[in-house]
Length: 167
Image 1: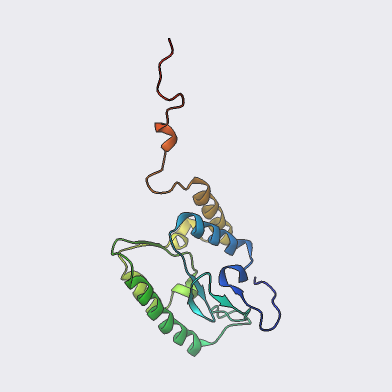
Image 2: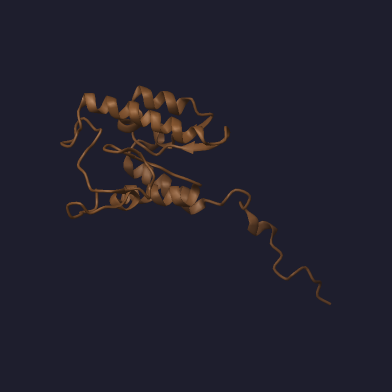
């Protein structure tokens, strides 16, 4: 689901997509990750702040807005190249979490690039998270239980009274 825009009107990519499912992915990315990107069927790999117009394109073959087999192949090659450029600027032990569906990451060029990364997780490829409802539940649990690195369980180390003894 995308935001309705007037012809020629643009918004940051992160604001174009308005479905509850994307909103949860965005909330997860903004809370739990240092940086995030959007895979767009029209634009490939996007920075969330990139201004774009609304569009009607999909990589899902059964969709009315499917861009076609040839165009999907071109998209996969170009997007894999963008992934290569983006990830090549990161330190080797960067952790990546991929929240995209198989229609977006199931292409050989994309899979090859993602498989070349040292630490990459595909939580939605797990058998237990087969449906969107399961994926949304997982996202909500991850968001609600997230603690920034180094701050997990800090409440166990707090001193409430400043450490002074009562007499």
